[in-house]
Image (cartoon, rainbow, N blue to C red; front, side, top):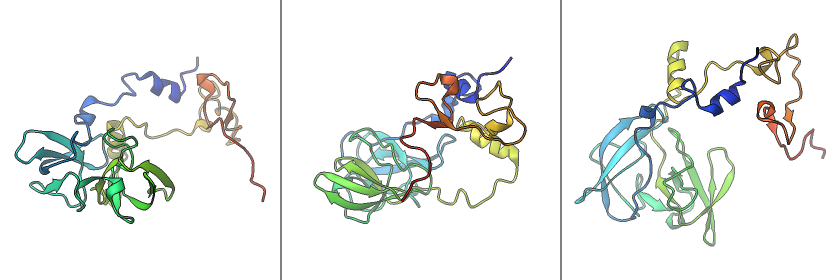
Length: 233
């Protein structure tokens, strides 16, 4: 009898494929009001994030929020909400072209959705009315509302990939903390009953284009592509 394919098992959310709660003990975001000065009171290594999490407390206040740490941030450092220095939080519409930013909001007030991994940053390219064009780390441009907030600079943890992981067990537990499946088995190497690409002798890869009305167990490979085949000039 065949097993559920990996996509189905992970989607079900069993104990095997579930993020441990302690991996996301804090919620990254921005303060409700863009005002005042904030002090970094603690740097927190988080298993669920590739960067370092920083805890900020309002100077002369009790408000607290958590954000991804900017590169070279230290405990006791002060930042401003609405400032223009490295580490400050600002609306991207108020920043100059060429400014490096990270943890960018998709919708104003959502706390940041883009460019959150360690050592990453995006660059403001141009402003068009109330829209801001940002060059993402993938070198693709994306438009944002000028009221969306971001942190100035590059996120901490840029050297995390420089040191090689020498033991497979260490890599396994790193990925498990983030609820990532590792090592990954190639679908063409499993049995035909366990995956649509499985079975056969050798790597005779079947079509990777799923039908538009395919059931959940068949939604693998390229899902609803706009076009297929080689582009003709």
